[in-house]
Amino acid sequence: MILSLWNMWPFLFSLDSSTGVIVLVGYGVVFASLIILYFVFRYLLPFVLRLKLYRRAAREGRAIDESERGEMSGEVNAAIATAIFLYFNEQHDYESNVITIRKVSRTYSPWSSKIYNMRNLHNQR
Amino acid sequence: MKRFITVIAVLTLLSVIWTAFVKPEKEADKSNSAKVEATFYQYQDAHDENGDKAISGLRKFWEFSGFRNATKGNLIMLAVGLFFIFLAIRYDYEPLLLIPIGTGILIGNIPFFQDGGYNLQLGIYQEGSVMNYLYFGVLKGIYPPLIFLGIGAMTDFSSLLSNPRLMLLGAAAQIGIFLTFIGALLLGFAPPEAGAIGIIGGADGPTAIFLSSRLANGINLLPDGTTVKNLIGPIAIAAYSYMALVPVIQPPIMRLLVTKKERLIRMKPPRSVSRLEKILFPIIGLLLTAFISPSSLPLLGMLFFGNILKESGVTKRLADTARNSLIDIVTILLGLTVGASTQADVFLTPDSLMIFVLGAISFVIATAGGLLFAKFMNLFLRGDNRINPLIGAAGVSAVPDSARVVQLEGLKSDPTNHLLMHAMTPNVSGVIGSAVAAGILLSFLG
Image 1 (cartoon, helix red, strand yellow):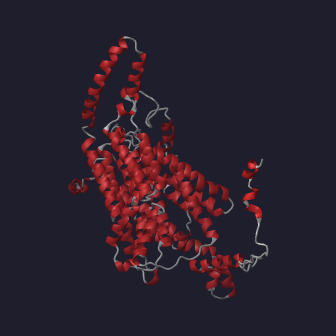
Image 2 (cartoon, chains in turn cyan, blue; image 1 turned 30 degrees about the horizontal axis):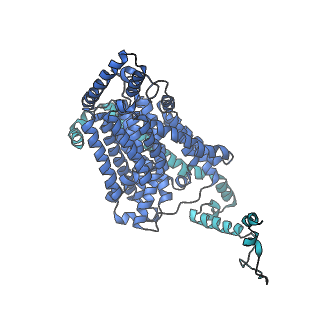
Image 3 (cartoon, helix red, strand yellow; image 1 turned 180 degrees about the vertical axis):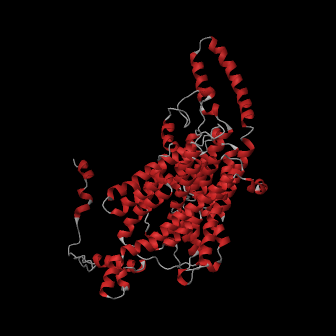
């Protein structure tokens, strides 16, 4: 199979010209659509979302603060989320985890004694 | 390595058995069974004259039993089905896909009486059978968009939004589709068939089924008046098999093309993404991609619709159904019917073997395309903006398995370097890229 593929190499140039068009246009369109998405989500969307912020900063005559951009790494987010989670988890009642057992002086209990066994009832005459 | 050798050995064994037995099957098989039947029928005929209806009933029972109708092709396909189930259970390779497909292969290859076009309404290709009705969803391309709906409802695109330039890796990996298209043309397939085969390189099962159901469905007519071949079964099986074998196929290519030093590159942690950005992504993505390639609308429309359900935050119930119950139901139906469509007399052809070889090559090319493009991008990037080239391998779609493979390979080089989140970007953009490519091939060849 690989050998037959290799032997076909010279025929690559004899392919129909429409094949080349399909391949080039097809691959080009795949790239183009993802490049457009890249530009939209890398530049256009962040710009539009921060337009209000830029205008206010321009009106006040100052540069935009890093914290105003709202850009923080996922790690910072995870740390904040963990802190909030732990905080809310600790809102429960505090328990000492000490178990106290009151020792009773009379240790004998007949609750499972054989003499009260049902089987014995049958033997009574 | 042991897994790799086991899988390759079994595949080689199956292909040897296939090539050795499939062709002479008809003559050899029929002569053997003819001898047995001749003796049997001579005996039965003698009794039939006496009006022995019980014997006649037995004779009919024998004629209709699987033992009488079994061919070597059926047995080979049953072995393939068992092998799929073995892979899923023993090695945990995409069990959610391989168990339904493997069982489907068993169901589709139980031999039954079909001499003289007799319709018992049993086989998947027999009109009126239950399997035929279920197969309708594959033939008409209904299941793949529903799967995409579920994928959209379960995918978090925030990694993509935080680092959109990694989307280019998803585009680069689609080279596998177009080079395989050329390869299939060179091997003598008609252009629509070659387009359907090429999409295996997208490593996206639903897309492969969708495109093959439109281009290589055994119904469409070619310009010369002949009918295209029905390649849905082989293409779907090849696509899903290679997707399941991602952990076997990709690591050797990754190790071959990415140096040890490059594998250690640490990437910047992704930034947090606002809710508004997440809501806008499916809406803008849908409008842009659908305007560029309207033919991919059934797939991308459903993908982004599912994502809107998830991200809008007000349709939680619908999103839950789409990503759990609905996708599970459709996966069961799709896996089972695709498996059953591999009925030996339709599936075991030299074309299927060629499709499997082309599929493997396209998968390798796609992986290499993603890796090499990541290395190419690194030529222009400096400092912590550099990309770990391993994530390029995730551009082949196969969500989320290829991203998982990238994570595992990254951890082998540096146990503290987690690449999963970074790999998800090329991974999901690969899904978008392969759907766009399918749309383009459909508009050119459909």
